Length: 295
Image (tube, rainbow, N blue to C red; front, side):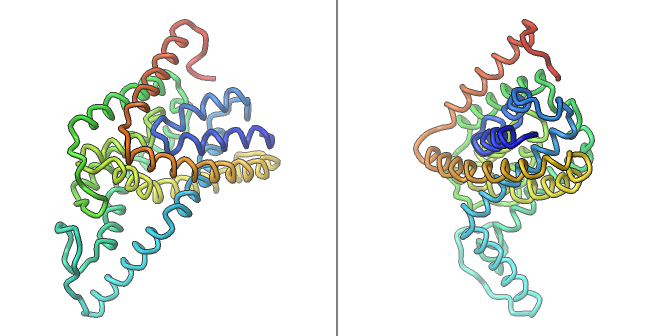
């Protein structure tokens, strides 16, 4: 993989990780177009996971204040409990224990929401890293399936709750939706925003919780793949990989800003239409033999 190939992948990753259109679908085409590693699925998966660390960095930078307030409140409230200095705290969320602040409770909701994808990710790790997850039949199908489910969520979701009003059941629902992201073409942001809408969150709140929920999942998968990447990627690919990760971070930051601003005013319908059109186009090209399902 050369520098230009890595930067192209980084830009594609940054553009599509947070917009609910499936980064995997676009990265599979980008990897085919650039021809990295001769189509080796394990090396491509490792590259994608490491470049994801750039978009993870974008989340840390964009939500730095939120992450700091959640982390400090979480430590403060639990140390107070251990010291026997538990106090009744005011807050917007009536579902939390009264000794936890809204910020601490949100930290727990991120933990709860991360459990399903952690279990499924570990159980199906080998499948996730294999060639099946680059199969265009599966990608095209999931593009359409999640698009339909996202549109249903738009219609049935009450869209009244803010992010600090989450309960454990709603966080688990969003976390269960994130499991869909293990299937190529589903989209992590698309799946979790869909789950958030089903849970009654507003569009912006669903997106914000979606991005915060990405932190444990992407951190774990990215760091694990980074360790494996040292063994399976050529030594001369690490400098381009670093450049691609930086590109993903910069573009990813702009994508977060765009999506949150967009969802304050509009529905996700434009992304639903795009997903259906893209999925249908891929299925048509596969059916006509224009492209192959796997490299």
